[in-house]
Image 1: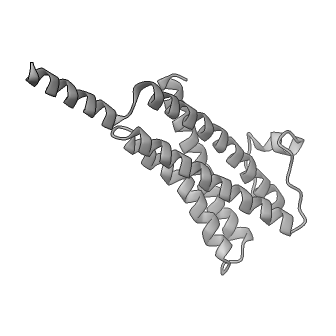
Image 2: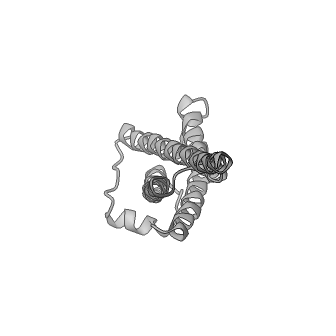
Image 3: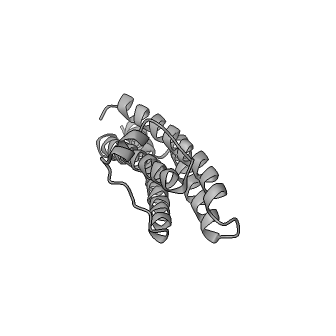
Length: 168
């Protein structure tokens, strides 16, 4: 994966997780009891998915290892949120749409919050999209780290080269 592909996936994953966060805030306002602990957990998982992408991107200049870790945390947060939405549907005896169901395919281009089943399934589709982008981003980060090393390794090589110059 090229650096350009990595940057595009990073931008798309951030945009998608921003949408997931915003819609999750609205979803819990509409469909989750305001005193429920689940409400706070869902909002925090959605926020964490978004924020860790931004933080990882910021850290990338000095630590690829930190960037990989933070993108992984974002991915884990979205998985937690995905399970919360699946639980929501299961506990209300509402179906989880199959990935390629007509409803899921229609949602990929549109967003509806007019009823809880559609809203939860819409967010499940978005989370799957974000997870796909984050998986690609992680693969690109890991590949770049393996091929080029990280910031600390580069500093060590420069220091070693400097020490080698001084001894000759």
